[in-house]
Length: 542
RNA sequence: GCGCCAGUAGCUCAACAGGAUAGAGCAACGGCCUUCUAAGCCGUAGGUUAGAGGUUCGAGUCCUCUCUGGCGUACCA
Image 1 (cartoon, rainbow, N blue to C red):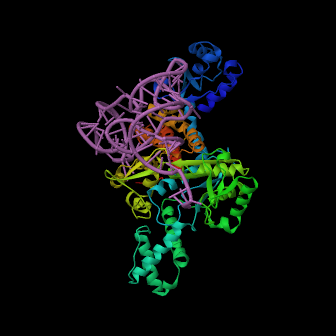
Image 2 (cartoon, rainbow, N blue to C red):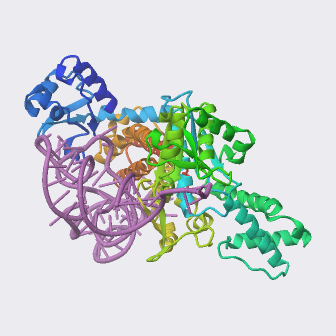
Image 3 (tube, rainbow, N blue to C red):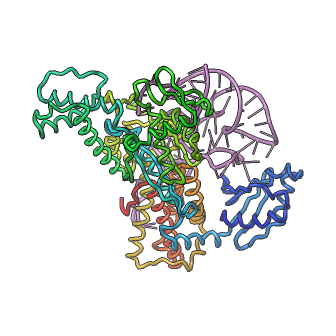
């Protein structure tokens, strides 16, 4: 529908010069009495044409060439909106398109041949993934899927650091727990990792090796062992919600390959560094940022900024056309430094898109649960999946815009297995499947020959909603807003459920029934594509 | 102090590059199952979009200020 309007307005632009450079938007009005589509172009160009908006609207309509079989009625309303009413005969054609394209419906080639890297989760392997990581993981994966849908070849990457101080403490924590399990008296410092998972790893070690490991160093064997076990655990958790990474990028490889040194050399060559207090500083103020920052400490160790910069450069070197970083809001202050530095080294940072999602506040009833991996005070993603199920967890994190804070009530999560809106969507899909089974038993079949018989308001509303799918995919993908798709699917389901209560298939006249079967197959197809893009199952039965 | 994100119904959140009477779900109340799945549908109630100014034909959306919350502001990652 929208495409048709764009076409006829393109032709119109040649006739009316004040429309020449005007961006013409078509929106779906909030009220049905304002038509199927509406444009405010007459209001917008009123000044330029120095006429009143309603007069412009009339002139536009007078000059507009359109097929009356497609557009039934055009009205001027309010201060100068132009409202378009489409004929049901035209609207209904979308069903044919969906049935022909099947899974390909709502797929775009816009970025065909382009490569995108989506970096997300990137939690260091110091403990199990928490609810906060869950939001990151689910949004990141959905963004990746949407980018694939508009043509990108996407690589999902997980960046981690197993060389920092956190990891050192982890190794020491594990060794102490190990000694403790052997019956030694130990003092377990409060700043060490308190989590039970470390005790469990220690138990395994005692079982497997007895006391042979007492000679091993915390930074060697114990750290490696902890990392290995925890990473397996993280991958397993991600797998439960359908997330598989193409690549795990180890920060340490940046040192081994000499990239860190190369970056330092490059900065020095451009005279972007200076030494102060035995540390090496990067002149970020010269690059337009707030303050200079240390990149190599007086101890000789780099700060996290340096490897981050080197890492981003590898993304460029690997030839990606789009690089998406997804961080929690705690990283909001660090990326401007990294981007400024990367830019200074000559890279086009407009290819980097940094997405910041707000935190998940976990509530235990009315109490806020403060989360800390080290203090072992956290709700794990696994626990959430156990309680609510993978589909509900994914949907819960996707359905809200990432710029909003998210309150997650653990007590509610259990109830939500019954009340979660994800079931509303899945139910629509399962219901259609069920109808199709019943239809088969009745010997009824699908046909596109009579779709013009679909004129019931419930049918037309549903069909018009199908028209919006492609736009929704584009909008969700280009703006990195998977929650839009979730909202769309809820609306589509709602229209389907209404159709279900008002229009029957079995028992209807045969031609009408065949048209309605085509309609629900189309709806099922769109639901399935949409749910899959969100990483949610589309069940045949519930 | 400064920077980023937010504040919308009792609760959790939507609202497409500013559009017409701000929408869902949950919770509350009242209806609808001899007929394709009641995890559904229909109805009632619920709002000065934190507050105050401003920009314009038109503001939840843009600008300024104030208030409240989250996250930062390290030679921690």
